[in-house]
Each structure stands twice: as structure tokens, then as C-alpha cells.
Image 1: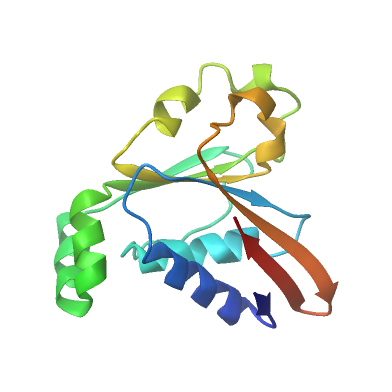
Image 2 (image 1 turned 135 degrees about the vertical axis):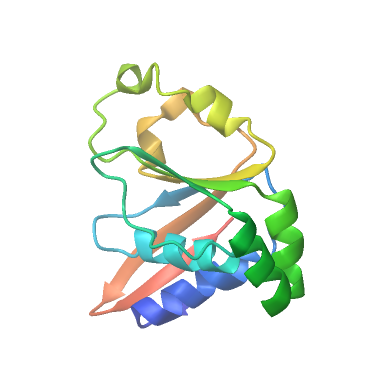
Length: 155
């Protein structure tokens, strides 16, 4: 897919969220400023999360849980989102940009997070996890074309 703006990137993330059931690990590949967090904002919106999504560059992991009010609002506004709000309990947004090695993530509970079937896990800079990445995952690659134009490939 080709996107020409942050709004289009968010829409792609929002639309993609409609296909998720829970337990997915989504790995986002691309340089700084290529739209990874913007895509995650759209994905969170598509899952019915109404909180502001920011990059967890310094905190490494942010967890966004659904509250009952978000589930109620989601149920009334979109039937697909309401089904997801009941089955997907949270979104984990992980940013490994500042991680130097796999040892830096020991003690963060990543193994448990990656195995959580009631959540969706989004990882920016997943290449830093190397062998810790699950084989079963969704890879999303962001490539710069020019200006605000990007290519987003989901495999």
C-alpha cells in the first residue's frame, strides 16, 4: 500500500485492526519517522482504544487496557470493534529503539507478553530481539518513497 499522509497511514492501521482476533504479534520495520507509531495509533483506534498513543521510546513498553466505558462506546459505534473489545483485552506497544542487545530486555516480561492470547502486541524495532521474536508474527515494513509518501507492506 502507498500512503501520502499521516491520516492515510492511520487509516491503514485502523482497517488492519479489523482483521485481528487477539494473540497477534505485529513487528514494525522502518527507519525513524517512517510512520510506525502513526500506524499504531490507527491500529489502536481500530481496536476501540480511545487513549492517546505515543511512542514508548523511553519507557520501552506501554500497555493500553480496555475500560468498560471504552467497550460500551465501542459496542455502540461499531459491531466489529465491540467483538474485539470483548476478546482483545489490551494492546502492548513496545519500542526497542534504545535497546542495545537482547540482554537489555531481560526482566521486562516480554516472553509472557508475546504469549498473551488476549492482547495484540506491536513491536517497533523488532530486529533487536532477534531469536526472541516468535516465528508466528505479522511483519509490517515501512519504506520511504519521497516527501510524505511511504510504502507499507504487510506479510
